[in-house]
Image 1: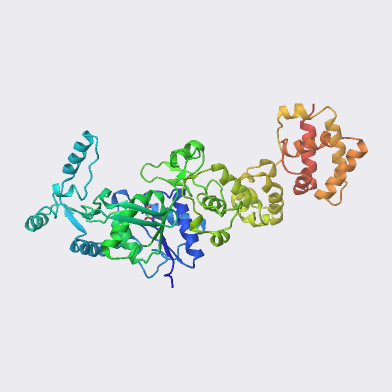
Image 2: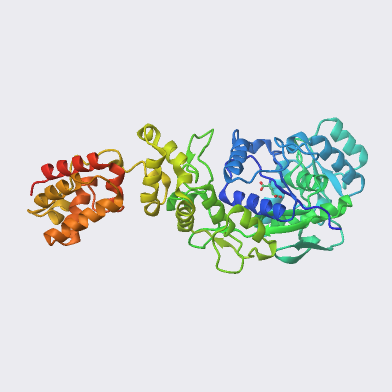
Length: 506
Ligand code: GLU
């Protein structure tokens, strides 16, 4: 029997979550749910120098907004905790000691200046220097120094790092990637990466591999930027005597132009967010916009991310989260970079606003409308949604439509010049008299009366409808004026009509 599927999203709380990070979380979530597995949130906070206050809360809030809740984590609990690396130091110390014992790691006492010197000298010769199986014998480490010297340096409190010891004899390291197939690398090109820093804290590589093993992670699904680290991770599994998880490296997210990685600057330039939620940097106080605050629906944001690197193979584009769980398959994740298209997110937002029963937006509309809509009934809200959902990209555009709340007080001269003739006022006065007679004032009865009036007067639709619209809304376009007049009610419709006739005298 296969072992259970356990996957993790392992962000470092070094700033806000980029939309690429949310995509990684989403694909992990989908894969877990599809396979009746477990989705784990692990906070990789070993790099204290890059810790940013509020970042962890931001990550949690983002996942919550998207509706991709972890099954296990620091807050959720679980039997594989703690789920924060800063609380797992003892485990890392114990495990790295085993590596040293088995000859897979060693202590390196070289001062940072000594390393810098080596790098500089190589650079001057047009080469690159790395600490590896060939060069380590020229350096100050527990492989070149006597045991007495090592003990002496340690007892004097000399700072040291612990490095991974790549084999002397080059071997082929094989990374099995679910998306990219088999990737082979010769160990001789790999350097002796630092596993424990001079401050005693583990590096990403060490902590990540130990945690994935102890948390029984079956599949490591992460961004392509981690692919170069995968051979070292495979070597670490071998050194520990553990079998590696399966790997899946997700494609890079590219700029809208397709040239290079999508960055925050692209968002600033193109006027679209690259973070799920608003973020204010605690040090610089500079803030960046988020999808949530811009009015995007989480369904639309997630659907956009789903298709940013994955496709079902047919033309289908709209997926609810549950449908995405059913359809998702790691084999259909693309290998090449995924080009980001900001317009697509807008398109998804429109689709989600318009699909389904409009009345499900009543509460959101009320929240956005605040005191302006405080006195509105549910049926008024539903009426407005029916009229406007087809015409907006975001729900917040609706409460910003002034003529929903008050009639126009002034009129655009250009519009009037073009559309308001000398006889218009007279027609509208007669129309008002017809509308006043209506006992039932709804869209259908208003339309019937309107058409009857045109027929009786032998007038074309355009001659009266547009002035009617201008009087009621002050604008030249918008929803059906019969629906809108019903929404206003008889009294308000007539009052706006009469105000317009008076105010616009050509
Ligand atoms: N902490 C790493 C990050 O910030 C995790 C990489 C991985 O998933 O292995 O992306």
